[in-house]
Image (cartoon, rainbow, N blue to C red):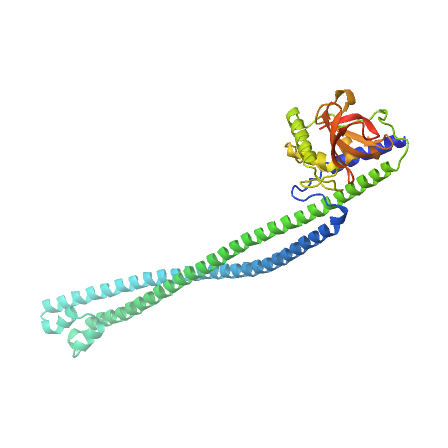
Length: 400
């Protein structure tokens, strides 16, 4: 029962960590590099905090511009109301002016008829001449020395003409003034509209600027979180693998090959033969280049055992989310199990000091003909060796 609990735990860890992307450009930190990596994370957090301050400032500017735009819009609406009132007043004044002008014309026609009657009845032409030639009541009054010669009827007509003329001039003056008010209101509306439009334009620009600031903040925060999460996971994996390897080195009675007690892996594979051969070629190149062994690294200049496996398949084209940086034990549950008799180049080999998934401490890449490419240890480095050269071979291979 204890074995099955350990197996379940390893499988759960494999599935959980398999959903967390590794940073392509950030190598898995060694124990000596952890503190330096933490400082980088702190700097990213500072950058995110600085961006948050920019966001707060941008929000304040946006609120100011929004108030400005609202004020400008209110003034624009008020100016529109004033223009509507001025236009109505101007139209009314124009109608009144037209009506009074008609009254003047009617009075002028009446005077003309009276002058014609006076002439027919024998009146002096010189008496009525001013009536026919005058341009207005004031000019008419100035030209006549007396109104007595016209008679009472003519006098009444003349007075009416004079009154109509005065009213008409006043109406014309009121209409002209109303027109001026209307024009001022129109200009005010135009100016208010421009201010409102400009305010809205500024507001739109600030909204766009704010969006960019928000996007930058989210990106920085996501990056910082990703780095922190990945570092924590990689640190745990490195510590676990290092601890298991140290334990294996001091554990007696390990078998060359452990019995199969019902181990299970993935039901599918993610690679093809071409990819597996490319992974083998990559591992071979690192070994022949005599790259050194360093705990917790995945290249390009140093590797540990699981780091070499990860880098080999990544170079073959297998990337996130189908491939991730795990440790030896977790890779056993992250690959499809094949028997040792069915091994093909590129399959993974696992080594345990107790014959259980949770005690797997080493991993290598099968090269064919009973040989493997491996990052063995700090003392031995990267090797091309027999698959039986390390005690504790698990009874299955892992096909990626």
